[in-house]
Structures are given as C-alpha cells and as structure tokens.
Length: 208
Image (cartoon, rainbow, N blue to C red):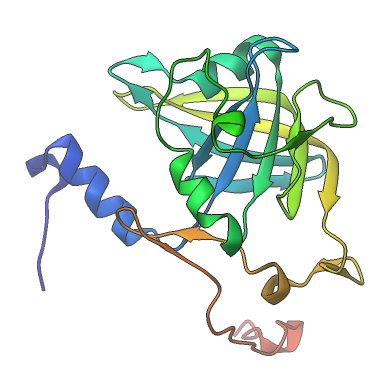
C-alpha cells in the first residue's frame, strides 16, 4: 500500500489525487449573468451536492484563477441568482467545452450554440436542452482554504424536469442517465445500478 503525506505534494498533485479519489462526482452546470441582459456565462463544476432539503439548498464549489474570482462567482455575488442544470450524455461534448475560459463578454451558451429560455423567477436564463434545471437564489457563500475556494449555496426556487423523468415524486435515474466527472478530462454515466433492501429499524443492533 502507498502512503502519502499531503504536505509532501504540490497543489497540482493534491488536486490530481482528490479528483481521482472522490469519484464519480455529479456536475453542476451553471448559468449566471452579471446583470439582466448581460452575456450568459455557462460553466461546469464537479464539486457539487445538496446541503439541505428544508429549505431546499444546493451547493457547488468555485475555485479561483491566479487568485481572482471566476466569472461564475463574480456574477452570482453581484446578481444573487443562478440556474443549476443536470446534463445527460447527449450534452457531454457541450458540457466539456463549456469549461474553456472566455472573456466575460462572451456567452458560452451562444458560443456553443445552446439555446436558452426565460426562467420563471430568476433573471438568469436556463438551458433549453438540459433535462433538469434548478432556478436558485444565493443563500450564502463560504470561503475555504489558502486558495480561497468558494462554496456557493443556493436556495432552489423552481425545479424544471423533462417529461418522463419523474415518477411518484422520484427521479427515474436510469432514464436521466446523468453525466458524472472522474479524474482528468473523463466522464462517466450511470452504468449498473445496485439495489439493496431499504434500511429499517429492525436492522439496528439492540443495546446490551
């Protein structure tokens, strides 16, 4: 077995290891705008989860580029809004290409030929092709570490789900077949799904 002290690694080495260990990672594909009518920024973030369901809060982490905020973080800090999308396999090439950094005057959505539609309650448009879109209002931003990565927490105000993906209040994950990130410029989809019996109180070990 190989044993590694993180303090012996450079920043790039730590990043490379963590992104290969924490896999697969769901991807937040986020649209944001500095102001209404401004270019629609679109970028993927694979450090993403939900943090609460009452109220419904989701969170993703945005790193910094040479110490400066990326456009997504700048836009959300200014506008207080964003739309978080879940991408499926047909959108893989577009999602990957949206990670390319462009000047803030460039709309990645337009550049990639991705149509947007008006959101219900936020000014930021959402992607027409995405199977799931969450309209969000900024709840809080939490800064971490020496590199000052920002966890952006958003309150979900509206949920848009493609027809056929919702059954009895649950997402049909196999039909959604969401993209996930693994180490390097590599992605995966659901693959085999393992079903186990539901957890019940009878499974707990009684106190002695």
